[in-house]
Length: 241
Image 1 (tube, one colour):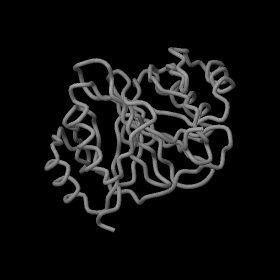
Image 2 (tube, helix red, strand yellow):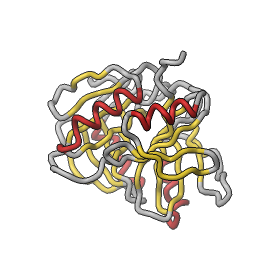
Image 3 (cartoon, one colour):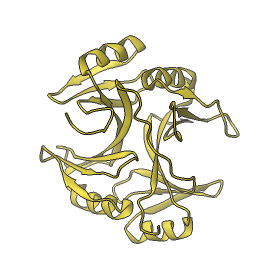
Image 4 (cartoon, helix red, strand yellow):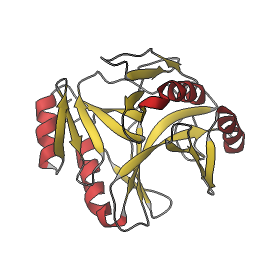
């Protein structure tokens, strides 16, 4: 299907000096098993859920923590041409993989792994969503870019600062308009959890720091510096409760 939405993998890029702690924390937080280090410097690992293909990966970097996305499509040259036509900029190439930036600056890669399906068998929690955080002055352009690039229907959220790009069985994409007027587009990971209060305590016991509590979500900071959220969504469906 040439018009199918690309399969998305979420990469948690973490400081190299905290690599072992990062793998330990994210494995415990998700309940998934690390695949083992790979890459020429042992800088990659995949978190493997009970069933299906892993869609959350870690990468050790010599920079502060960040998130990037891998977009998997079988025809990579066409995918690159399309993203450039929409306003993306190629930054470098790593072992044949083009590394790009969205018009607002979020890193993503064009890769060719086969599509999978998110495992929603855990009734308590699942890391199933990436939230792209967009400064106010970049909002319209970035929403247009991601909706066109991912070829997903755009749905307005229950609050005006949110829009949603969804497709069944794959990583959900939430777009959030920030109050800040400028800056670079960035992203964070979101869990769907059955009991946010209980899950907040569990993550705290694992070493996460509480940042803020909102009516429908809680913001935490992992020991490696990654900021992420626990959200009041059904782990079985990903839908807001």
